[in-house]
Image 1 (cartoon, rainbow, N blue to C red):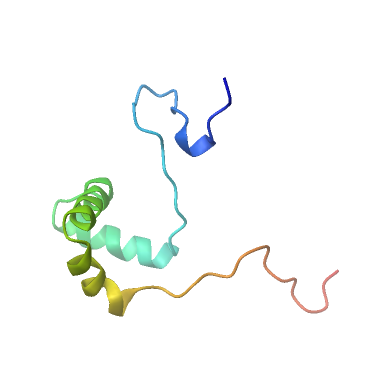
Image 2: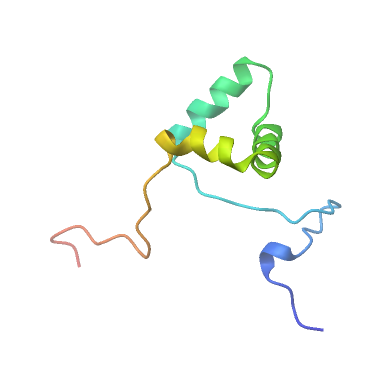
Length: 85
């Protein structure tokens, strides 16, 4: 049997869903976490609600997010600082 991609493998921690990961900007994540915490909410349930909203009404979601959509990130390794070898 071929091996599944890591993103589709079970985590071995008893959960049926595969873990997903993303790398948000630390400051953006902390600010969002603070907003949610102040309202008694959690990041996991917030992200799940966003996914459900996107599935239910993609045009409204994408139109709402358009002014906040981040630009593309650079890919690959960061460049070395000048003068370092």
